[in-house]
Length: 487
Image (cartoon, rainbow, N blue to C red; front, top):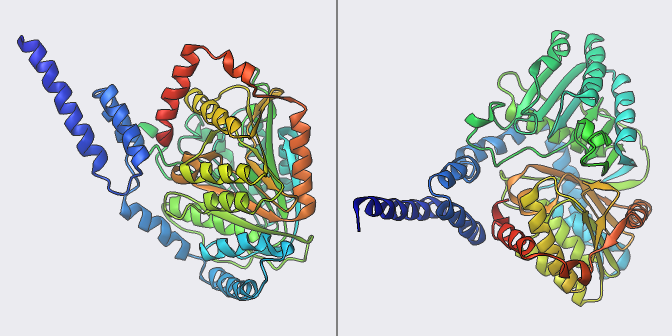
């Protein structure tokens, strides 16, 4: 063996040892994620270590502590009031007979409160938006009517036609003396020029990036993103759902086609739960003056409707994975049907087993996924897991009208969840997410109707389609699936 071969052998050995030591240094990492990272580190010597440095390292205990501490900053009065309401609701729910089908849905509400999520808000009106143009036209109208404050957070904020139109509306309100705070994710807004907000900031508006530097190559926590989309106007109107700010979300990108998403406009005390979420995130990201409790942020509201809901958050600052547990609980409660829409389907073992048991119990499981990728690796893994679900008795619908980005689940005309969380490990473990869980027959039926309408623009994943997969397709799917715990 010559010296060059010895040198290469030594480098391979050193890379393997460093890979093992690096990945196993975190004792709390999932076994599946450990093996996925080892695969990357060993297959791509050197380069894999760079990828791990930016994408693989977990948030430090100090960072997690700081994020959790933000919940105690500025909101003591509101949080104390909410805890009293939660205690009263839990006491009431303890006495409910959950054998009564009418009460089944409140098992989920009870679980969330025990996971330190908000109490049930019962006086809301909820409006669906399934088209981006409709949603943003209404949002701009509501922005223009703001009297006290506009709090806006999106994962992606682009400086294109839509982004400019929203900023112009914010500028006008800032000039009128309305408090305007805009937050976007450091990676999701990486192409955004700060000059877009120059006029708005000149009139007192503020902008902030979530959880990291906009210069993302210097951001050692690239893998942990604020994927939430929350807008609160005057503490009275709230928006949450899947749409980001960009022309692609209103169907302006030819390669993606029509953008099918789902968003909610909430009026009622449920808006206060979105307000709490925004304030905590802003204070966790802001360097300088923080938002403190003010009654104007949480005004007393007249009942706008009779819709019951909880706004549930999850993220890497909390290992309880509340939204995932909510999905699993919904699946376990279902007796008739489970309809799911998601652009990415990369389940962990717990979610897979829940769906397996539902199918074995005779529950109809239908899942709708896109017909094209916006993230190729993730889409290939999605196809693999979708095929597995189909083979176990589920029905896989592939949306063919454009790109499906909606994140929805509805069961039995009883409970519907809509928000920012996909059915994938990233949403459960790595991203900061927020979903509204709604306990209402009318809204559940409305979501079911949207699903069935979308099904008319979809085709079934069949054995014939699967048989046409090439060897290269199979390799892509299986390789992506191996990496799925870290995608």
